[in-house]
Length: 289
Image (cartoon, rainbow, N blue to C red; front, side, top):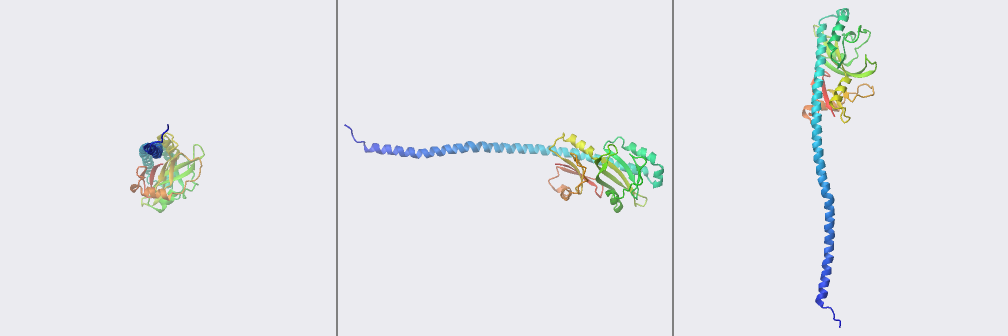
């Protein structure tokens, strides 16, 4: 004969179902927590690892760039010093000779100046301009064309207006070898007479392609870097890679000029270096970016 369930058994069954109902959400919540942790923990570890790798790569790249700038600066300084020395030797060679005496001795002076630059591949040309802006003698051309007027040159105007001893100027000019226009920058020295008055200019031209070749070798031909030699007003004197567009030199960049002027007090110290060669237009900077 069937009997009615005991009241205590009914109560136990109800309690069991209630406990299972409460445990189900707890289990789902735990699974959700584990799922979120399975996603976030690898992401967090990966982010930390990526940051550490980036910081290490950045430090290595910064060190490599700093070393490259140091080497480029040393080379640039040597080139500028060499060109100033050549200009000074040419000036000493002419001494106190008058323009007429230089004209009379042009062939022998041409040969001697040409000999001075013959073993220096970075020297594209060297010549002397008189106080009126006419050529006196050249290392690459004989005889010079005395009808050409050089009085509009930046360096000539600067020397005539100031007592600046040296000047650096960038231009594009026709190559005597190939006939096409190429970038050059010139290191110029002011000539003075016995009374200290302006008496002309000694010009030594530096081939921009020489620096481009040097930077290409220094940087291993990498397309990730660009390198420039800048004047203190931000004018680009030479750059790598060379621009294929034969446009005139860009106007001075005031932001770069300010960065160069503030170099000693900025965080650009590890990427720029300066070289003083005169009062007007006489500081250059090697810049790697």
